[in-house]
Length: 284
Image 1: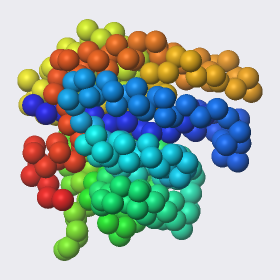
Image 2: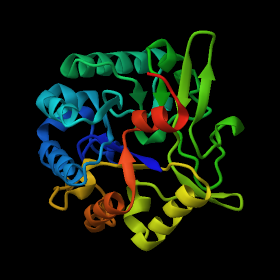
Image 3: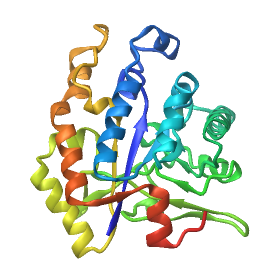
């Protein structure tokens, strides 16, 4: 079974957790660590001959185009992660479309290839902004990976509460697929296990057991998501960030490199695009 691996490429100070205290106009004044972090990720992937999808923030691409070229050169897929890391439901339709178009255009110019995939910051596609689905289709995307069904989901339409790839919307001429983030259902509860703080906190033995269940028993691929900043124990969080938000950002961060290496050792991974092609016969 081929599973999907993905990275959301953003600076450590771009995260939604810090948005109240660090504004986009302040980003350029902070130490950039994205090249160090991403090259470290790329070298780990190369060791295991694994491929992944990298969802890139437009702001990062505008400042580090050679990094984007290197990701592509090493055979990984490039996707869109908006320009400013603003959650969809905080934007107007016009603002969202502009960020989408600007980032997609820049990335395609940098790598000389078509971009097919999108992931919303903080998995913010929900019932309050379903208009974004139409915009994604209109702007030429073929898949989305923004739906995260976790705990007792109340912010998603019932037809979106699925644990494996499905067709998000279809017209006479276009199809938009969804590859949701992997969760593990226990009764009516959806347990998030596949990335971020959840992956950092959970013991690897449990993660491996649940992922093997998804592959071997349920016969489904799973999708892991990470951020390059999660393998960087030397990042310097600005002192303006309150203790609890700092703690949330850094919790379990010392374990994530080991867990990434362990996942690559124990499972087979490819980009989201490749998994959709091979396991679901999606044509790009």
